[in-house]
Image (cartoon, rainbow, N blue to C red; front, side, top):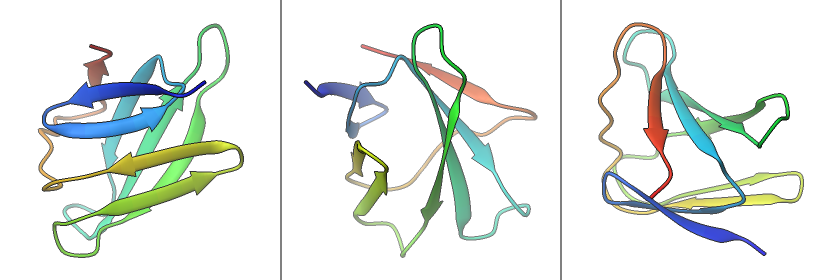
Length: 84
């Protein structure tokens, strides 16, 4: 069953262990979410930013829903967000 992970005000509904955010093309509207299952290789999820509202991603059988503003603190490399 899917879990609810709260990350910086976002609700991520997925079977996630860690969520990685990568900023692509230096501040463009395209972002990438990297989901890493326990003891498994990371799976890449592409996210298109449509303003700063609701994002819905369907990656195979994994459903991820991001609500609220798409404001992330992105540093060089990847930023790790722990599961609450």
